[in-house]
Image (tube, rainbow, N blue to C red; front, side, top):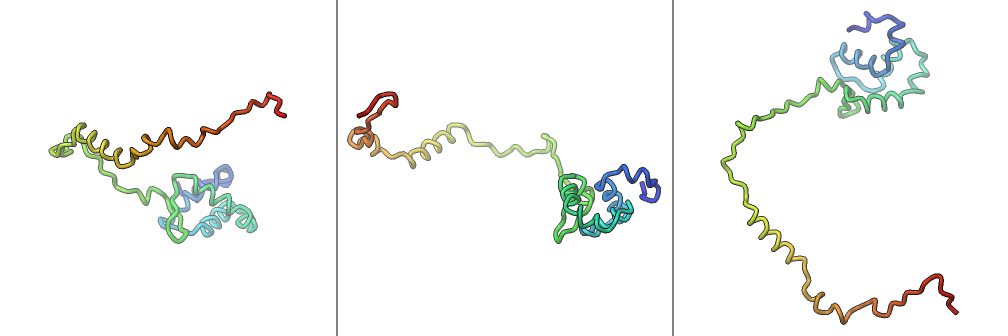
Length: 145
């Protein structure tokens, strides 16, 4: 749909992001935020101070809308122009010739890892080095004089 085909009344009911989408779609190229918002304001015939007053809101609107993508150097474009090709393989196409390690091998490795961090000396000296042996607990309700 072209902006020229949309009536003034319809444009006034559209959001800034919807109009920005149409502008970017028709331009076919990326644009700086300020330039894009100036075009939106021009289409809506808004006063010039609108750009200064609402540029932050416009930035936030584009930032949360998944239809737009922020590019390096402050350019904005439609996300559909920057989709990555993702290839999903069927299970039949996946090579399973490599065997995965068995659970027993994993248990042995885990036991060895645990031994690295275990300090046997702490168990032997547990009774001798009791830091809390002189600790006295006093009940708040008891009257201490």
